[in-house]
Image (cartoon, rainbow, N blue to C red; front, side, top):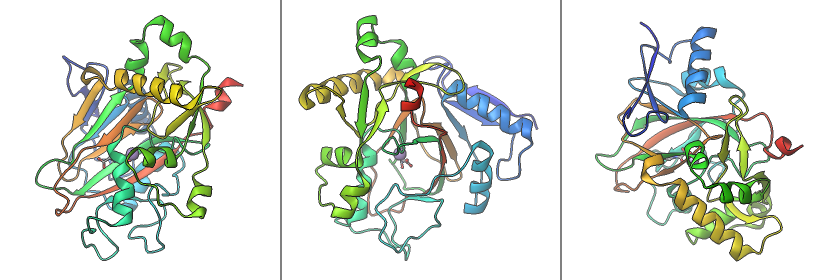
Length: 295
Ligand code: OGA
Ligand code: MN
């Protein structure tokens, strides 16, 4: 078997989203295989692997080829987690594997993934890669969409590029949840979700390429009036999520999709909420805050 990476859509998006074949990533990788995958990630931003029957253990082992794993704090934790500390539960199931009720608090919070975002941009050191494994999928819907913030940056006009340069945003899950009208946070959650600063234009740590670091978690631009900042970020997001920059992934069971949060945004799409959708995510932590780039 030879590891091969091809653009999923060579005509519309030759430089964004690849499909990898010729490798079983549920087994330990050689150093050279891990390097080839990392180079593919740098180039494509999103890689799709089909037919990878992961357990949580083999998924964690594969993920650790690319760095340290983040603790899974993406969802509200109610002390009865279904999955281990390094597996983010991207499902609509409770700890007994029953589908969450429509008004379940964790379900409503997790609907925030329907907004364009980059994982953990609200952490001081945000995520490098997210790796999402499809264990059970609904009959229809539930795609995940990805947008290239590198291509979106490249296509900004020069005035807008200049305006974005050196701007600092504050990111918090309080901002993204406010957008969908979820606001019943405890004092402890409000404290845990205190905003963190990130550059609006970031440089990729491996390729040096610039990209827009947008996310619905971004709620302010330091030094700007809030309505002006929100309007500007909304315009940028509209530009950056034009269809030409977007790959929509239709899931098959045992797909693993890996995305580089340092150069993409993503969002989930709706599905019949009475059906089970069980996805397990590992997250590789980045090495430093984007604010360290400015230094
Ligand atoms: C995530 C996420 C989208 C989806 O796992 O970080 O945003 O389609 N998932 O489940
Ligand atoms: Mn996400």
